[in-house]
Amino acid sequence: MPNSKKTAAERPAPERRGELLATAAEVFAAHGYNATTVRRIADEAGILAGSLYYHFDSKESMLDEILSAFLDELWDGYDAVLAARLGPRETLEALVTESFREIDRHRPAVAIYQRESRHLALQPRFAYLADSQRRFEQAWLGTLRRGAAAGVFRADLDVRLAYRFVRDTVWVAASWYRPGGAHSPEEIARQYLSMVLEGIAVRE
Image (cartoon, rainbow, N blue to C red):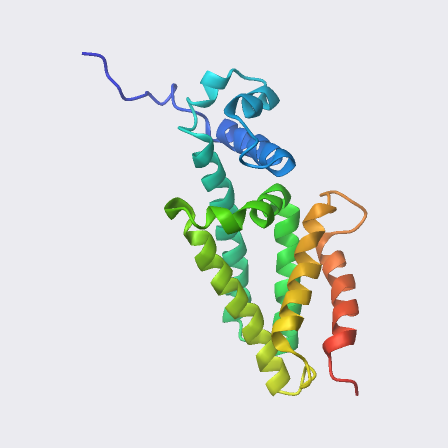
């Protein structure tokens, strides 16, 4: 009876798996999940479509890994910021900076998330997307409310509107940002913050 277990030599190399996920992320981001076929991903990776199934059982599995890796890393960063118990302004600055770092590391995944998360979250496999969105909103709204209550941000702000403005201003950068450009993620964050905080910080 043949042994169904793959030997160490037969198992997909982790680095090759990562390369294929990176290729899939670029294709999903450029063409959309529904319009992307396994054959298209394989063509971009320079392999046969059947060979892709040696590494992944479906394009859904690839998408799941891409989004999970992005969100796990995002929340590692956000949780560290929130656990530091900084002041509201410093927390906002740190959240914005961490967001730009994640755009730098996971730009295609961010683009996929922005385009696909609403309808994907209706599927049981991707229910974690809705949970992440709720956590995201709580983190940002909580920071803005804390700042308004402490007199750090303007008390007349509609906090939910301010949250949407800051969120969209930051994350839309995934549509134009390219790693290795003239400005680092930290520098872009600093420039964004200088513009945003002039509008919501209490004037001395």
